[in-house]
Length: 212
Image (cartoon, rainbow, N blue to C red; front, side):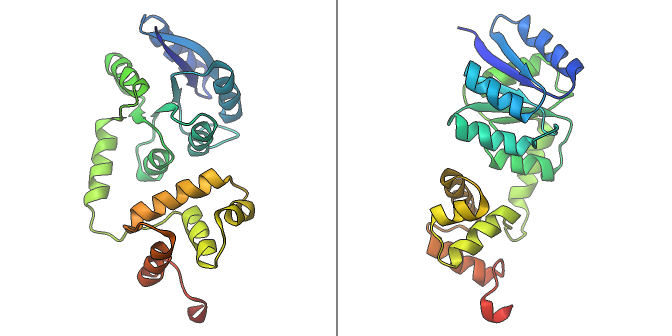
């Protein structure tokens, strides 16, 4: 059975090129194309692809938001980012939201096909530049930081809010709250909510009411 793939990019010429690459390889079947996030979500629901190949910066919805919503809509879906951006402001959020792989658009055709097959199997695939960036990030002796949304979630948790209350306050799903908490636990090296709040106060990520 061929790998069912959808291509998501706001540039028609890029979509045409990717369709040509994958359609001429019998290992793949391109089952649809989308120009933005909302189109991609609707198409993924309709076609149930094995792999979503997507750009990171598109109109109507950010790439990281699309990855998050794809993962919520179809848990376990494989997403391969193919973009021109290799800075940590783009790479890290995409990986955190669940991208299976992250490649740059200068990836040679043969490597792209090989990477897509691996990503469809759920294997992590990274371009050398991205792998190097992540390695440097892991080795950097800097204090782990939380994203703005993670700080919002943890701040509400610190004030006693439940997951459901956090979700309602931030207009996100409870599943997303749980995902943010898992990322927070991993970043702070803790195993539960109380320890995360304590660690955040100790490191100055959160300030107590008496300090504000």
